[in-house]
Length: 467
Image (cartoon, rainbow, N blue to C red):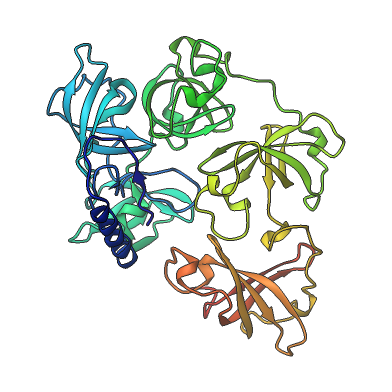
């Protein structure tokens, strides 16, 4: 687990030898423990926030505390216990003092006991969320393969770290579900949203065209740049920052399951941020093997927005490179891979003219390797193999959804890459493919299906398809 360091300027000071000694101890402890509640000297306070969540389409930490309600909170008072926002993360603190007009305050952080003055109350102070109660019989949501499903809690472990659940859809049961990572309180269904509703939401993503805000619904809503303020906004980060709590109103709800928000109450309705539908006609017939020039225009936790130029040289169109399509292998942070303004090469994965959606990829076709596309593998030697026959394989790479394996025919004359989906690695639930195999490991696999036209082969490491 990464331990972020907060750099602040305080009047406290310590000797350099002591500082270096403490840093050395911190590095040692970090290497032997997954999570340690450490408190360093002022200016180097480690922030351990297991409950904070960044909602993506892949496995992530989940908010284990209830989000503050949308009701306006009273101004803080001296000695109140609150949370303060610092560099996109909320930290528990004690209020030391409040200005006469209630607009700013001073606070002392619990972790490290650093003090900070002149904190803006409206944007950087909120109540400490109440603990999330996970108990038998309660309806919750569970994360499975990047999707959230309604479930019922069947039991909770004595240490309250894990639980057993029963899925509403299908009635399947699962044991040993880690609560911190995979359980959250039920989210507000999109069908329950109404235009004009007010929420207090958390900024979860910032792109060149707007802000993504979590209001407690199934999906994040988007505040278009034209609805952030009454005046013209040139730089969104001059108005909001990651993690900030903002007042928003539902401005519109679309038929494709999306909803728009506004930070200006007077800009509710279809105007303001709406734009004409994208003209994606020039990209409809583009081969998924053709590489196009693009420019990164924004990043969000679940991917990167790229402006791509069609082959005919017509006007560039914005599309999304999902986080799983940035490169082969696991991507933890989009901002570690690309930055706004970067020139990239992309392929067109899917075009939905009706919805105005353009899906792009920076990966080679089929999900293997990188760089220029290559011809589909010859899978004909594998077509006649029985699904009961075990063959040799070597782990080539892993992905959030499974393992890519280089398989060899029984006669040893042909090899090809195939996918062992995460559900076919072994019996029982597999949370992370990297925990099951190592790159280069020799394994035994069975061929489940072969699609020679698409150059795809499905494999299994399990004894029987039915289990």
